[in-house]
Amino acid sequence: MTTPADLDRLAREILARNDRGGYTVPNEKVYPFQWNWDSAFVALGFAVYDEDRAWRELETLFLGQWDDGMVPSIVFHQPAENYYPGPPAWGTRHDPPTTGISQPPVAATAARVIYAGSADRPAAAARARALFPKLMASHRWWHEVRDPDGTGLVTVTHPWETGRDNSPEWDAPLAAVTPTVSVAALRKDKTHVNASERPTDDFYDRVMTLVEEAKALHWDGKAVARRLSLRVCDIGIQSILVRADHDLLWLAGELGLAAEAVELEGWIDRSTLAFDRLLAPDGTWRSMDLRTGKLAPTISSGSFLPLYARVGGQAAADRLAGVLDRWAPAVSYAVPSSDPLAPTYDPVRYWRGPVWLVVNRMICDGFAAAGRDDVAARIAAQSRALVLEHGLAEYFDPRTGEGLGGRDFSWSAAMWLAWLARPDAGFALT
Ligand code: DGY
Image (cartoon, rainbow, N blue to C red; front, side, top):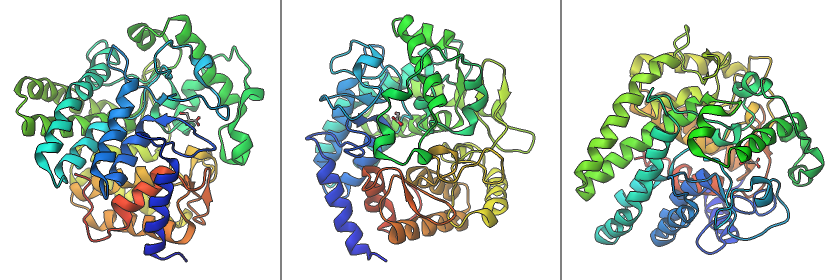
């Protein structure tokens, strides 16, 4: 078993090794560019020992921001041959090249954490003030472009946008997408990672079909939101966005930005109310297929994230704690990314079962805020044991703890530094 001091060293070494000068690649083999939510979590790791570098991680991400406010899922700052789909497959014509989809908006939350922990508040205020309009524009994009009818539920048009790419939640919505491309031969990921730990070829054909559909719409944001053949409300993005709205509102207060605060309050009120539409009869929140109005048949790790958005109180937390109790005999490490008792569960295949530390971080925060420190403490302890016993892998088998996917992974290193290395720092993220 590794010692905490060893992991501290390793985590810093991983961030240094994956640093490309202002941004961090999640893993040089599997993901050789800048990823959106990876960078926001990585910034939390840097914030522990290099505040300037933490801000730069966010600032560099926003170099990829589109005119309509969207922050892309990947910014291709430099060419790399070992990843598919690269810039030509996306055809977005942005400089620097980017994908045409977004990812869970964690950046405002990261900015709040860095600002609040800053040893030099005036310097932090200058960085936060410069970033604020960009963060605001990205939230406006979600609340307006991706919610064109103002329902309070934001639309996701691609499984990669959710970050929980091949979760069973997207099986039914993806089944309605007729594949028009066959891309198995173009994939690079399976040369770096065991194929059993990655999404299937059929998944790739369907998700690349969605890219082709959006290309045909010239990546027009509103047209994509209304017309793509996959349109879902992801309980993960819905929650992470509302939480980030709260954190941006806090920053607006610190920076004295009154008009922005009013706009943020409006989004928070509207979106918070809309969570009721995502409640299944068993009292758990689910993702929704917006084309059919159907809720996802299975609970995923995303279903725990409304607590992180400060939606639902102790009764909801008690219900979700009950779900974890039901799952406990099937897993040694919480929280599996999908229901381990459901037929769709696959404990090694990416988002169909494995444990992911960044999601655990948010779930831990949510349980604590809803009055269940006991559950937060259990998740934190199991996450700490996981990395002490199995290292800083991309994701983990919930039964054995075995590390899966990419090794020496940036956001896992950051979660060690910012969270698991400090068991007494409390469970709250902000
Ligand atoms: C991948 O390539 O697997 C990524 O998750 C897409 O963003």
